[in-house]
Length: 421
Ligand code: GLC
Image (tube, rainbow, N blue to C red; front, side, top):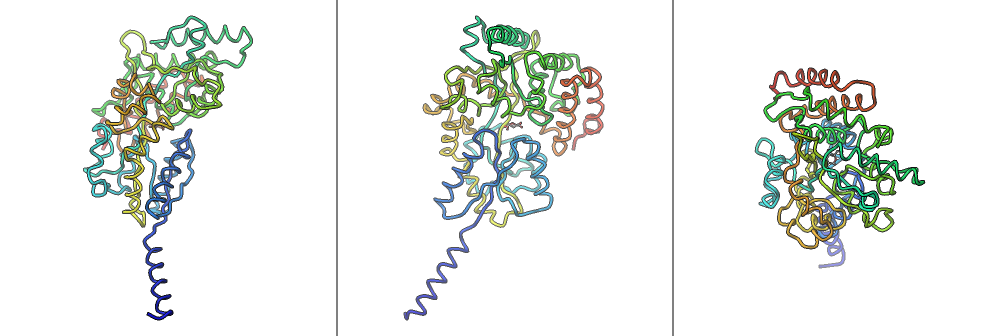
């Protein structure tokens, strides 16, 4: 081979390699360490495979993220290849997502069957499970001990205990301390909190699995009224604009006795520099009194490939890698993200880093689903109406009973008398 032809064939080889290396974009959430840990795993995959991947930043408010995704997907844009999808979205986004079954090669079978059922729409595996969530009660062990308080098991006990500690601490100069912080902004996070209030009072889940709208009932009224009573007393008025990160900010700075949040807040609260490191306990959220039960909203996130991706095969490979046992273990250890792979709940390292994953096992297995499956493509409309109605009551603009009666009528119109699909 002479020099010219050698140079030519080298160039051809290079061109070939470049043609095979895909450049992908993945969109992840941005709550806590989500974005950073998404980037680390994606880069690791890129290093192993020779492909390129860029992480697209998105708003940390899930409802805003959904709006963005709907825009991108409905225009059939190829701008984003891989999406982080909330467990309540498959019913709305399924038609835009690639069937991952042929790519998973059985890997999906490692995941919890309930979670798998949720990502299987019309017989297609529209996403791979990434982590699962349940609403938890974080508390300040040191403060409860100092003030002789037990971990509350009913909402009334929580209200009384939060007030007692808040008053006593403020009287002795801890003026910025609040009793209870949670997610009260008008968005999906409020739907999660409010479903917990309703379910824990035996007040249903807005729309029941059989399609019946159930939100107008005395227990639901009581549940929302109880929460409205916290605003401005044990919770700052600003809670009406709090998402997960706002609540965590207050709690982690040492300025709240109790907090409702997802598991991700655990590792951050125990990190270097956290004012509450070593002082935090986690318990199941309180019951709504007699007839009530402990109820945690079921949350979680998935990874899905857009049908409009120009590199669907490579994108599917990235998703299978990011949701694999090894990456889920890493995320559980560093970010306290609950795995969706059953075997990881027997992993000693994971349980040592996150004792609550074993202690509150039942909270995770019996978490309450939002009415996403039954309402399908209309879920976001239902949730939007629900969080708005609740927000009006919390902010004192409406009374619980008429607000929920009005909501019932309007959700019923959306569901055409139980015929949601
Ligand atoms: C968490 C949950 C998700 C929920 C969201 C609400 O990200 O995993 O399911 O919808 O919080 O803010």
